[in-house]
Image: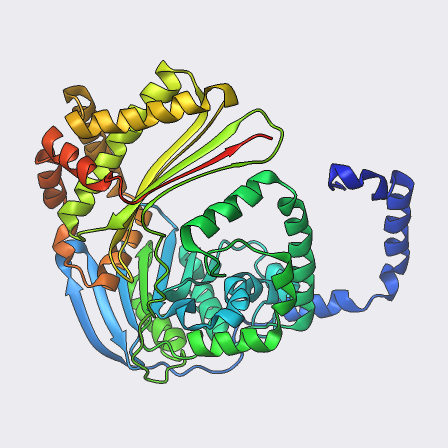
Length: 480
């Protein structure tokens, strides 16, 4: 037995003798507890009791060049399948349906924010969380629901022999969630304990400040708050579930891995073919939650640890083409190496460095580049200036020959390795079918054409575009 707790409440924790007494009292009471037989009997039941009639496949298409088979069920659900030999006994799945919590009003948003966690904690069908975990003993199957801002769906994985388990779990999550009051109360209590400890740290407060500066006071971009936990309730969660998962006619599912196509089709007709549909034509809702434009500098103080936290963010609109996405990611990779060389290796001035860039396709194409590092308070101003100078020099000259070749060589090697991974194909197929992009962009020769066409001038031009100073945020946390 391991007992953990906050240092500040150590004296409130039970001592060793109390712990032994608790264990003895549980053991003494065990013969009178009638739950053991019930748990065993429930866990032995099948996932789905009701008979599910196989629904028809209304259209099929094969993209032989990519080893991909597409089929659509009578209820409108689309399935994309790619059997692969890459990893024996592994199947990966991801699905999505447009809409997300963008349709949930702000007054109910906290329920949407915790929705997926509470969905898992409550279990599904006749299986509460305990029985659900017991039934999964010895299995590798996993299904995780999600509700993001613009879409909802499931991700999952399983062994080849567990494909029916995976689809049965997805069916139950979509049709029979258990948002019972006991599991909600338990979750609320655990979350409250976590938040009380986190709220006492200056870094959580700094993270909250950063979100307010970037997005204002909208609850959709703020961090979790104690005062929101009482708003969690079963009625609202069931309502959100019905709205978001009660009509899945536009659901897209992608399966990649070690499976037989005919088996997947037969199981999909039973479990996916009986998912609920109402025939709505729906998309996500643009909430207008863009990062605050302009030039923003903010410095705050908190904590006594001798280190300064620094975060820069550059952001703006993005020309969403495959070539531009490639140039953007190549520029970020090159500059990440250069910043690490200067700030960490040459200057020996930072404890850690993060530098990344990402592109969001919806509600409108935008990019975001974030540089973060922490350093000694005595050198923070010097290293902030040094970081900006490195970026300015990079915009002026681009990468040198050695750095350019390093980027291109790494890209070739990574692509060669990725094409033998199920996770690569899962992500690529999901993105391309979701966005209705041509699969031709997945051809190895198409990617290598981009790599061979990459040069210092292209990367330099990308740096100039994306490091315009008109939309830049600098946030600094110094010790008290």
